[in-house]
Amino acid sequence: MARCAHNPKEPTSASETGEAKPLTAGLYIVATPIGNLEDITLRALRVLRSVDRIACEDTRQTQKLLSHYCIAVPTVSCHAHNERQRAEELIAELKVGARIALVSDAGMPGISDPGAHLVAQAVAAGVPVIPIPGASAAVSALAASGLDTTSFLFVGFPPPRTGERRSFFETLRSERATLIFYEAPHRVVESLRDALQIFGPERRAVLAREITKIHEEFLRGTLRELEISFANRDLLRGEMTLMIAGADSTESAAVGAGLESDLRAAMVLYLGQGLDEQAALKRVARDRGVSKSEVYREWQREQGRHK
Image 1 (spheres, rainbow, N blue to C red):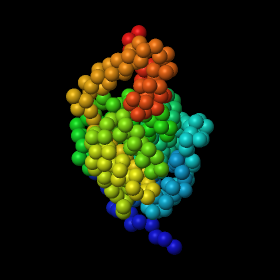
Image 2 (image 1 turned 60 degrees about the vertical axis):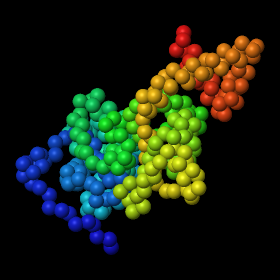
Image 3 (image 1 turned 45 degrees about the vertical axis):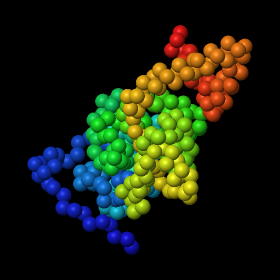
Image 4 (image 1 turned 180 degrees about the horizontal axis):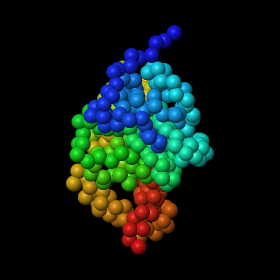
């Protein structure tokens, strides 16, 4: 029979924890390890042992953590497919004094994970919501990336479809802050290719995978270098964190004016030659080596700016 991890001596005085008293009623948002089970705080362990029950993204995944630390507290599922219904049940319990912990499979609940709806409902109902900080893949990856950390923008998972993903990247092309994305391994090569097309092959980027785990890896270089590197590798496991350097001042100015004026000039040229709008869009797409739908979306935005 597997033994649970040794429980470290927990501080007991108010001066050591700031809250030695029993937990008050409320919803506790508990960050859990993103890979290494040692990356959990003493406070998180105390909260998980003290609540009445734990709402989990996946009860089976959470049970591994609870068993590791000998925590025997009832669990209930609260995932993307049942969160709205489950929220009603949990809010009803919280209103009469329950102490409930909310966890996701890894990291902070509600951050590209289920939990945001439950938190919003708890706030609306006047229920205390208490964050219990901990591991974060986005912040951990950024800290070790070597990219600018003075300003960053976390944007979660890009859209899964190429057209939507490229449009999404286009809205971020002139962003000066470092961009942080999550991505699944089976889409990472496609996302890198789309990022290369939108941000340019020389934009610096870092891709971190398996953070805090045995096979932790950071790949650094330009988007072109990363795309080539991943295209020649077998499918890798684990979710990944992709970070792309922000645009410099020259690039931002080009995006803000040059690219749009190039599109206008090209469209005016082809329309002036007698082509209708659809034919002109098709010709511009061919010139740029991109899809017609991508040029169409850019043209629509351009038309909207000049109304």
